[in-house]
Amino acid sequence: MSLVFDRHRRLRTSAAMRGLVRETTVTKNDLIMPVFVDATIDGVAPIPSMPGINRYGLDALPDEIRAIEDLGITSVIVFGIPDHKDDVGSDAWSDDGIVQCGIRVIKAVCPGLVVIADDCMCEYTSTGHCGIVRDGEVVNDESLEYIVRIAVSQAKAGADIIAPSNAMDGYVAAIRQGLDKAGYINVPIMSYSVKYASSFYGPFRDAADGAPQFGDRSGYQMDPANRLEAMREAASDEREGADFLMVKPAMAFLDIVRDIRNASNLPLVAYNVSGEYAMIKAAAANGWIDEARIVRETLTGIKRAGADLIITYFAKDVAARIDRDEW
Ligand code: PBG
Image (cartoon, rainbow, N blue to C red; front, side):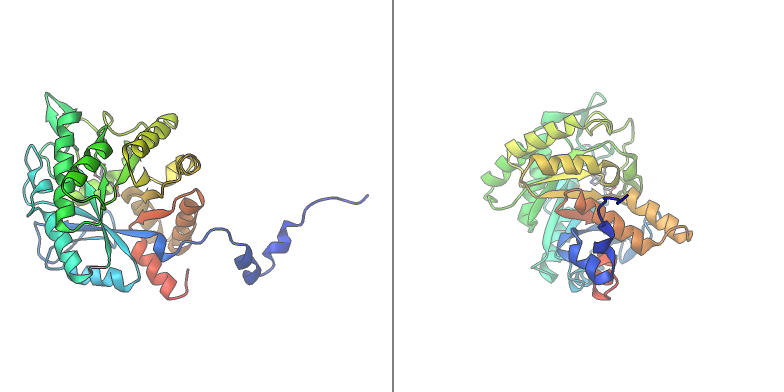
């Protein structure tokens, strides 16, 4: 009896052969490095739940930015830790806010780096919520006015891309109109279109001191159980004029990345968030996993799922491995 079957292993016979048929490769161009700028410190402060990631005072920012650019990374996303919080998150939209100052510093040392500004209020409001709170509720339309102010002040400071993450309805339309009116017609919007109410943001909230002081974010961020709702969120952002769509977190939501990739022709970003980073770091520190290989598998999987760009705290590590020919 002659067996009939396919010999898939023919294409796996050597590293060179496997290289020829490899379908997905993560390159430096795919990576966006998050940067935390802190108004409350001079120098550098480590973030305990994110080993290897730091907060930078404005004085320490130039060295870090040069290091990122020297590694061949072309884009950063900036988050701020202000030295005061209030009901309306005024440091988020002040021309002298920490992010605005940070953007000016970054642009002065590395003008060619693409600077993305996260447009949200939770690090800046005394409530720790992403918008304005009235009678215990985060109110949508009033919050939009502030989200637009933040975007315009960030563009004015030199941000190349505005990335709204506060999950209010209509923010893309509102920001587009605000940026255009202020003359920033060429500043794109990278919308955190599909942002789940996720426990994977825990370490970030420690890092940026942005945890809600009451309740949670499930009144505005999405239920992790939902997929059709993700499609509606992405579609409305596209209609409102978003230039990039985003899915966040990444690892537990790769089906959503793929669905949106298939439904839209916009560049798609996946955010490999703080909790995903912390889990890999913690397991690796215990010697339970091989960090380099796990990171490669994770980021390759995110790209294979359909992401064009990945925001990841591993960006510098990966770029350094590429330089050492270890990727
Ligand atoms: C601001 C914001 C958050 C993250 C990015 N922008 C926190 C949140 O929504 O609670 C999380 C990023 C991460 O966990 O790495 N809203």
